Amino acid sequence: MKKSELMGYLVYAILFAVAIVVGLLVVRPIMGEFADHAPINYIAFLVIAIVLGIVLNALLIEIGHLIGAKIGHYKVYSWTCLWLGFREKDGKRRFAVQNYDGFLGETKITPKSEKSNPKAYIYMPLALFLLEVVAGVVLIVISDSNAGPGEPPAHPTWLWWKLLGIIVLTCGGIVYIYDIFPAALDSKNDGYLLTVLTNKTNIEAYNDLLLAEYKLATGQKIEEAKVYDKVTNFTSRINAIATAKAIDEGRYEEAISIVDKTIASKNDVSSYIYEDAVAQRVSLLILSGNFEEGKKEYIASSLEVKKHIASMGTPAAVRAYILVSGLIDESKSELENALGRVDAVIKKGEEKTRESESKLIKTAIKMVLEKQKDWDFSSYNLNLGDKKEEAPDTEKKEEAKTPEKESEEEKGE
Image (cartoon, rainbow, N blue to C red; front, top):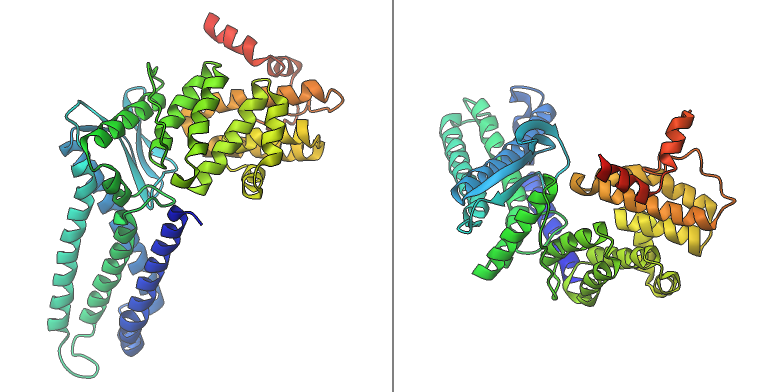
């Protein structure tokens, strides 16, 4: 088990333990004794308090990121809290319902200058949580003093205000434990950034990454993408940009060499990143014409890597599965299964890479059908893998175009 996976299990165990301890030792006794005096149904009260605690703390974290970004001289081009927020499009901010890489939200930023520093971006959510703790403690103390003596208390409603404060603070504690945990987890967290951004060099690298991601998101050209020889979960994101740029420009060998750096750093990255790098390598070898080498790589890969490819959870994995199913295993049914997953995988991925990934997958499908000439997939849209109901002849002709012809037409336009 990798260190990052162990840290993930550990933090979830801590969150679960906090919830159980507070629920059994604090919340349950109050609810059990004074349920008859609840202002509303006590179960409904509990649900409302938990939802309020989650929403409030999600907002505090992302508002903290927003304020910290302004203090640190960053531009915010996408802000999401529980799937709702805004993003920059055509130079304007627009409301959006979107996925995010974070526990309860994500604030995407890009540096405005060389002086941009992410420390305020990291610390402001914690500062807002401390204000929440102060407010919560004040509410609990006031509630205790106003409840009055006796069985039941003279003013039992105040105990429910106390309980509300306890539940909201507990939700906040759970959310912030995840956010400040000093390790890479399954979603972005500020604690991991604190461990990475310990010196000026790493801050500069982080700003380079943010700038590159912003350019990709807004359709701007990246003149030069940095490549790190020693890859971690953090620097793998920077190398992924250079890999995508090389693939888009048809420099497969260069892209493979960048992916190899991640594979060589197996002990420094999560198993997910490592397995996806192998899937990327297998697909790029085959797409670049090195079929035998790609086949050999796939056969020799571990069971975990093969499961990752078969799960088709990333564009690299689904691309590799298409090529493996069609050219190595020669299974038409498995290729059909892969085609059915393409659209969902592309939509789940980053919006900035959807067009590029669609073209790569179309190239992979075309390569398979060139070998398996007796397989009929005319009812499938080779751009996205959707099965069409009734497509006009003109549309079928458009779909039959090769990626090379499409790019020539795009250039002509």
